[in-house]
Image (cartoon, rainbow, N blue to C red; front, side, top):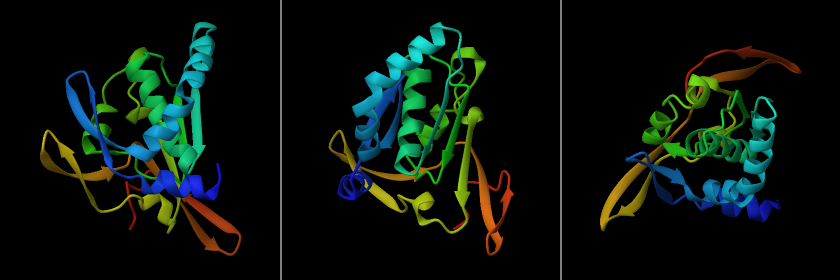
Length: 176
């Protein structure tokens, strides 16, 4: 992707209503569109791997982390392909608290996406707090206010001195 395409994806932050098993949530439209553009290919590869007995591991950085999160969600909850682990690095927020709650549902192989997700963030990285604030969406002609949230266990990387780092595990969603 070009920097312009990434900027468009990041700023296309209108909350998109999404429904699954009679539950509704809101998802960042730009991240959804980016993940959806490659989903059919990922699904085919994941399905082949799953039926061959291999485990599915997903990862990504920044926009790629947002795409990996949404792709993992769809694999598990739409297509019932278990994701063994989702490891993200510098991930922005992709959905609201209802999305995060849906990711806590038990999926295939008796696991939830929330329980297999590890987020790694560098302390002070602004991308990991994006999008921040409250966003407006129109849902059946009424205004809905949406606040995005993170999914999974957050591990924060701190620079302790020049070129020396410490990883603090399970530090909580945000440190801002």
